[in-house]
Image (cartoon, rainbow, N blue to C red; front, side, top):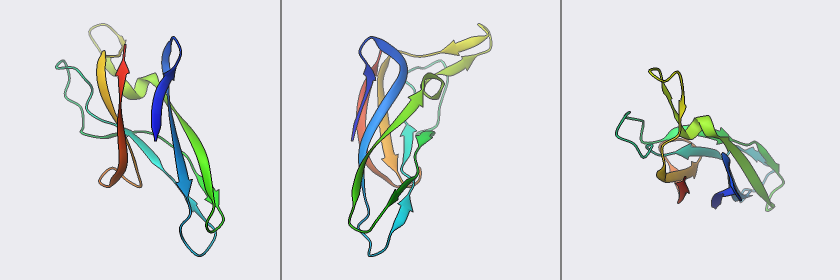
Length: 112
């Protein structure tokens, strides 16, 4: 799994991962992308928040590279005093898994 921003563009985080069907039948997988706690003391956020997902149909034994786009709002918080989204700077953990309780991979990105 790799995660990062396009050069000079912090508006959309892209998470790239490989999905493999290790079963004996064709099927679908739905890898889910979660962001960890936001790097701020102004608000308390959940340890993992759903930020994006993709449905991938695969035949048995096949793999596919998938890119999930995570919008800026997924790693921001709403500041009602300022009446706008605020994106805190710092290190942000990114997780991928079948659900929020069972991450299978993680990485860290720097939000500027």
